Length: 231
Image (cartoon, rainbow, N blue to C red; front, side, top):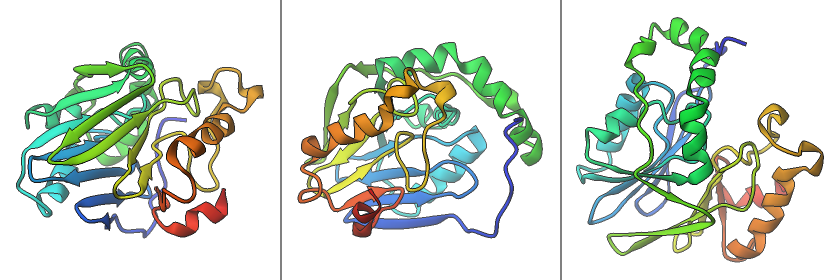
């Protein structure tokens, strides 16, 4: 596949899922979230081209003029191709160490996979710049920003080694990134030991860590309490 995607009449949606926590759903591409605090903004993933990242930044600017402080890269499937836009905003980037390694080693593969997508939208592949994380972690990391807490969790490979869950404990929300979404399973070509069903294993590990379902109400991209019924 060349990365081309079928356009559907599904508009990009931005929902405030908790006070100051926004989720952007984009059917054709990749999802994002951002947390607005008094001190600044934390952004999750940066889309699949700098031009898309500029659109994301414009959406964020409709909700706040606070500086972009952190960017979380949840996995290495090209959803970091917009990092350069947020680097110019002064953000610090964080990812799991395996994600950081794959961002570098798999860049040629991910670029090749998206040539059709770039052509389809008349995006210049040459505008994509590899921006690697400034900070990496092994199992967990905690970011405190403007009195808000964000937990980054790695519970084993789901769709990829390094797949990161982003937990907002006060808001009772988790952003699942690549490892989990309703009616979607990982691509086994990217996942080690597929016969062991790492996605399911990582989700089962996540439940007690997150206090699921009593202490976590919402999953993004589902982002509604009813999500737990589908698990």
